[in-house]
Length: 368
Ligand SMILES: Cc1cc2nc3c(=O)[nH]c(=O)nc-3n(C[C@H](O)[C@H](O)[C@H](O)COP(=O)(O)O)c2cc1C
Image: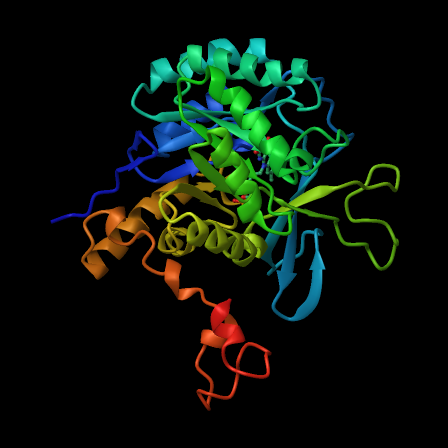
């Protein structure tokens, strides 16, 4: 019997568990409709907000590449290089809510059975700002969005009450989630920043506030490398640079570590894995840790803007893996490796009794 790609995730039925993440591939209705035509199971819109957005002068995203014969990591285009990561300092959608509203309706009319999630963002410092989250939620769900994803993770905000600055503050996360919950008729996804000490704490805040799903990771706060000849950052405006986000292959292991913490702490909750997915083998990491969907950005950006070949490979790869392992649905392998991430003292040593996690004697380590 052929395996089933479709999944029910946090109350929503997806044709397959592969989504385009909130980013340039999902910045317009035409892109999103193309993405659904290409076979993506769901799409998270580019983040929609109510505050003014003006992007930096010049490129907003570049790609870091490495070469097999040189340790150089650079954004410069060189033959024979492999993708290492994306680096971006793009803000949220520069299109206003009024622009998005009819388009959300149009996308749902074209693809009523595909899942459209509206990514939204506002501040959290005042009641008016909390009201903005509610305005965005109401507007998007009224037009047919199947869920909202709260952007608590954009690493490019100067405002202390926005983006990853909220995502570092468990109380603010809870307050925002609660404000959205008051008006939401659709599931609430919370996209957290990986840039915190213990992501489990922030996730708990999101669940307490009424969140249904955690999406992780957004890009990792980072800087572009400095060119050793010009001494300029490889991406800059007038010689200046600011906080940007690293995505793509380099963040897969980093994001997995965050996800393992999350799924172990909340084994019964729903998680959408993001970071470095281009092939099914990458997505499988997140599924085996317990995620019910995965999201893709960098790989899709590099494949005709919306990833038609990426989604084809993801679906094909999942069918092949299910056949190989004898699985008939994602539920049969979701979380299979969640409990294999353990404390160091639980990893076998040449002499089993020799190591107690850095403690002198046995007993301390086992109490952890
Ligand atoms: C150019 C660019 C713009 C992005 N814009 C948003 C955004 O508006 N909202 C959001 O939640 N994430 C945004 N992201 C983050 C992606 O959705 C995703 O979390 C991140 O790129 C990691 O996935 P990847 O490794 O597949 O690229 C953006 C990423 C890039 C590269």
